[in-house]
Figure 1: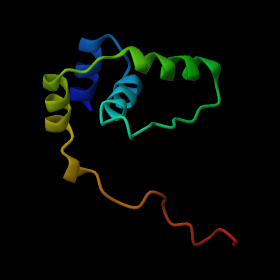
Figure 2: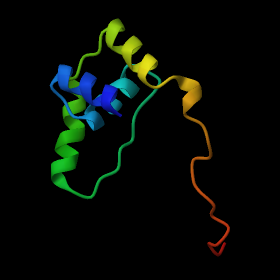
Figure 3: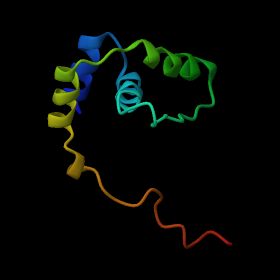
Figure 4: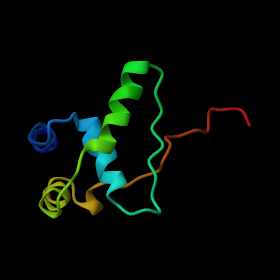
Length: 83
């Protein structure tokens, strides 16, 4: 989404870092658990801890992606996988 990239650019971070920073801003009882296979992405993920989001930033993110706009199962159809 263009608005997410715009907010990330204004923060000097990647959209992925912005997403992780948003999760970190949700409270001390919420912890992101990003997965990665590459050191470069691990380093990028760690950089999210340095992104400080203001109330205005959080509001802009809420406007860009309202909570009710994201819904669905965590995983797709898994019926083809043997149990």
